[in-house]
Length: 402
Image 1 (cartoon, rainbow, N blue to C red):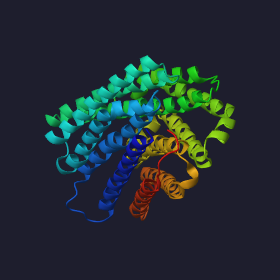
Image 2 (tube, rainbow, N blue to C red):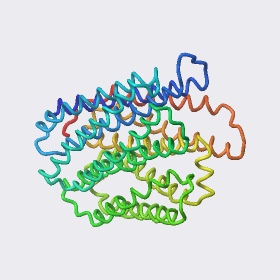
Image 3 (tube, rainbow, N blue to C red):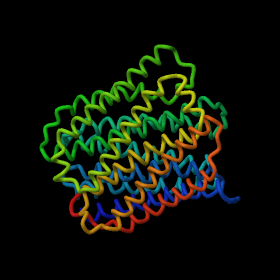
């Protein structure tokens, strides 16, 4: 099992490196001429491959590793993992050249069908094995399926050239919301609770945290489309959902504090540090969502692209990707992985700099104040992300257990 697990983890980390390379290419094109690169097409490849080739691929491997008889489970799920990888690389190689064309849409559709396949198989295993964190995993699978409705709608609009900016953005944000606030987030929480339950810890706030997050997830989609003309009662429901998520975060912090001895004894030092950063990033993200229910602040946030990009990177890099690397550290013998640890330090430092620069750019844009050299600095940070991801990939070794 260790060999199979090691192989799939290395593939997922390599995909993270490719995601970082695409991000660097886009930043390079902003600063220097690169006529043969179509920026928007590369952006589509970057986002689709980040979701399917890096995050979903790694989540699938980690979730499968939670099942009983893990060696057999990995062999049984290998066709799904290979199919997901194939569709991810299909999108990686087709989007840069044609954008939303028949080849890229075909691979994108196939990727969704593979996600259905995984959801169906894993749901059956959850019913058979009764994992302690099954409620988190089932919610993740539910939101994974729900998110595809936005992708299907987007593909139909792009294939038929139906140009409606509001519907286009609504479909994009529907997919994004139920991917990173649904599938990604609940799967990560399921992994966290699985590790806690494996050590027979009594989780006083566990069910309360789950109920608050799962009930809030559906109405929280409207936080992404507050720029639409929504009825007044929707704003109230959305505000309640945002407050529920903040309350759930408070209970999560209490639960973490109650079991600090577990983290000290079972998690490597670096995993504890990155875990705290993930928790802080999640707190910032939920507070930003709560503040966005104020219409004037929401209009400002959605009106400036650097802030939107900064928010998406906060979620996908600062929370989801960093949590996956934290789990990887917990599952890996840390003492022999000096290069990997240094790579994570470079990667995390680059994430923090990226967020600071994007927020600075966004705030200054609100005041119409130019920031000299900001694009060059963002290019340097993008190079840091590539360097960190490369160090993690080349520094990773076979885990002691998984």
